[in-house]
Length: 464
Image (cartoon, one colour):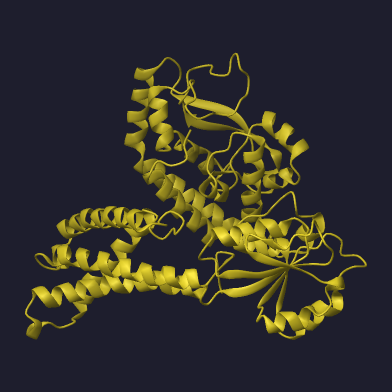
């Protein structure tokens, strides 16, 4: 397992992505070898740069078209469609690059042949990788110990994430709970005081034991777990394992002790300064770059409906300080005059015609760059919320107040991982992601979130 942006990924997944890049690179070389004179074919430095450029652009397009998301490309038909779209987008981008830098052109017909070979090799590579996943090859075998309720979530997540790199060999309980013999095909074993756990784990070639014990005091299998740890088996608390598996916490499962003693929540002075510098530089240059968008959007809003161009509303920021957030108005003027504060819904009748467009492409969020420049917000952080909803949610959701320990953001881990929320259940799920971000925040995670945000904006996903 490799730790990357505070989450763990199987090494085979890294090889999978690198392998596709190498296949695209090899397709360029093979296409060139076929179309040019094989006797005069040499791998010069310039040509290596040309092939690397094509491979890089193609992989970026594959990423932005979700080709690496195996839950989306779960059929060869869907894979073929997305491959065709991604490689088509690559040809457009490369055409623009070749127009600017003609010395990077690889030659007549080579790119077309490259596309054919790339699609063929990628599909073969995917078929092989799917066989590896189905067979469980290279999966780490784990045991779930106990029946505290979290184990069911962990099993569901592992079964849903085919490429997570884990296989639950068995669930071990101390006493019978409804005489359950298996769970989704995973055997359930009952052992009095978990006796013989170490020997059983050794025989099953277990790499990790995940604890999901309700009551630890007096019934904690210290000796058995100590024997397993000395034998080289990792022992992980269920919430810690769930965090690194999913990239979120579960506020309904974690207790204050786990938060107090767990790793993370480091907000060093250097991190804060660097984050602020990035915020100022990015917001300043984006405001300059988007000046034409400002004027065009303002004109369209005025032509479409009565009311002001900008919408300003009080929000709660870091340390619960209030500030005025600024957006382009996307709803009818005085939209909450009769209803009072309510969450936006799908196909909300209050949204104007222009409002639907600017919400879909996140144009309505652009004025928040002014809030970032002023230091009231950051580029990345929890979504800013209104005090009306905060008072309600703090009474219902544990740890909700912890999200105000950092500045709110234009985008965030919850926004790119879960999307828009319009209910208490959504607020709970988004807090699970927000707490993960606050616990593990770093500039590298911010950059990954910004990259995911670009992908969401380009495809207009998740807006209301």
